Image 1 (spheres, helix red, strand yellow):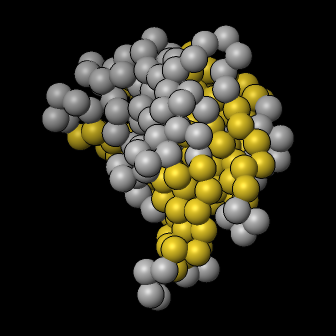
Image 2 (image 1 turned 90 degrees about the horizontal axis):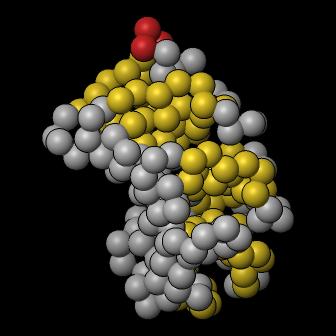
Length: 195
């Protein structure tokens, strides 16, 4: 298992290379949910209520009802087939996830239909963060992108000069993210990164 579990109501939910999505009760370690994911996953699930959202190496993003133990929908980019290594971020009725197809995808949480896609210049393994109606996500093209959550339009970008596969952290009006050259960046409102 490469992904970090998501916890809800005392149950840890996680997928792995066994192509199975698991729910493990934290009190006693008993598996209380198990169903096929359709492919191996290294992504951490995002939870919205009783629904988990995660990507797989079978080129799909899934929505799974963890109570009913079934897949609600599957999304596959209709234009290209690439794995999803990025962990999803959830806000309201939107799920945002990066793909190795070089695209940041925004999906409708209820239907799995694509609201918008933003193309970067390289694969997106960075897991997005959402704050203040904006999406913050890195790309292997060496940039941190700030996108409008509603439209997917680029608000701002920061050129790090090395692949940005880390996930951003946001707190106190600042964003912190690392690049593969070993540099750690802290950006704030003066840089245009955080609103």
